[in-house]
Length: 295
Ligand SMILES: [Zn+2]
View 1 (cartoon, rainbow, N blue to C red):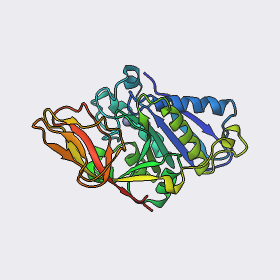
View 2 (cartoon, protein in one colour; view 1 turned 90 degrees about the vertical axis):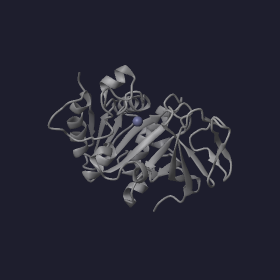
View 3 (cartoon, rainbow, N blue to C red; view 1 turned 60 degrees about the vertical axis):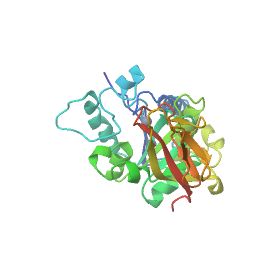
């Protein structure tokens, strides 16, 4: 088995932007977006003005071939080269990390199981990274996830973005929408172009640059700060088929327990990544409240 990396170099020096797809093998939008971009660079629709663009359409090829999240180990946790390789994914660590070692900016394209549209996980307070995340044409953001649920800075929770940040890169995970959303690959493709434009790497005269448009206006941004996680009790069910980022008012019924009692929203907020069919005791949904985009 081999892993493919495509690198385009402009003749002017500049930042190295890395785009990853299918770190999770069942998330198909990243590979589709990246392959489209490769074709567009090759035919001149997209032109680089400076720097280099490192593309890895399928980071986990075996999981991608099987259309599963991972084969033996989640590649987006414990991501670092290991002396002793035990799992299949351990062999991918040095390849991905080697690429990220030579990167200034990372865009990692994912998708998710809940019904809903694209959003970005924000972490920390690096103003350059926050400006970059805001430039990608996406208007929904989840803030404080890693701080609340990621286990801090430990290597256990270290994925692509966390590893890239340890190497000084600006890093963003873009969730392009539900796995099967018709526009998920378009969201990813557009974000790659927006990232190139944000770092002045996109040749303004190329055809792709002219139709690119502007990032979402600040007034349209929705930023949710994570507050709590709910686990599913035996026999409990949602009161509505919740979609990711649905708004709920304080006191509104979210779910019903087997004994008929209702679980209501503790305050005005948003449902984050609801999983109707979560196993008993499994993560069911998250709850967050509106917050200003961090500056
Ligand atoms: Zn993923």
